[in-house]
Image 1: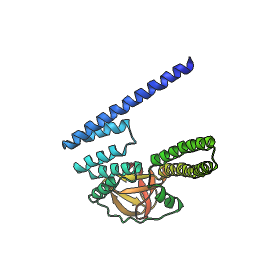
Image 2 (image 1 turned 120 degrees about the vertical axis):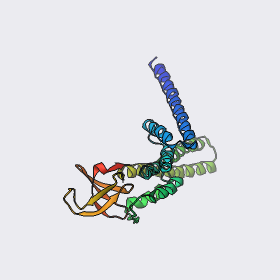
Image 3 (image 1 turned 90 degrees about the horizontal axis):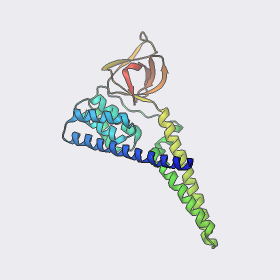
Image 4 (image 1 turned 90 degrees about the vertical axis):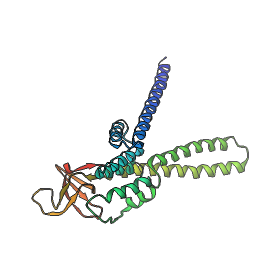
Length: 253
């Protein structure tokens, strides 16, 4: 009886979740229709409400960024393009529009890449999203099960050899995909980034207001967070300069 109740509860949970997803999608389509009518401020309000319900949709953040761009709020546009790209690094439209938005920000910081081992691995693994790697791992698991059945049921040595070889290959593909998904998830969690939202701030040499000002930074500039210290953040700019800024001046991506 308990198993039956749990089974019914599981089915009901699935139905409710599907209904909620469908309702969210319906609201998202409505917000998109508002955007298409060029009612950008109303679209922004709708997108923000939807982001409170679902915070892992790169399409939502991309559309929200576009709406902010249309209203000439370029710092907000940069922020949400970056959020979309954090969820889907291969969203080329977001990369293109981000560059357009950055043209309206004040700081012109040359991007200088410095790679360590994890960055090199990331440059390879980020060709696919975490979800895509997970899907590949799932498909590999199903294939291994199917190939094992073929191997077990077959009476011919040739088919057994082929299926066994295929199992080994698919196994390594599955293990590699699991590793890639895990690596990318950890890499994204460890790479903290933020966008400056204050009109102008000072990049300091130390975590105190009286320390030397290295340079001025302006809203819309991206920083990478290295260390948290009370009300301060140690950050690295995209040109590899390092300094301290106040926490209250940024929004983490």
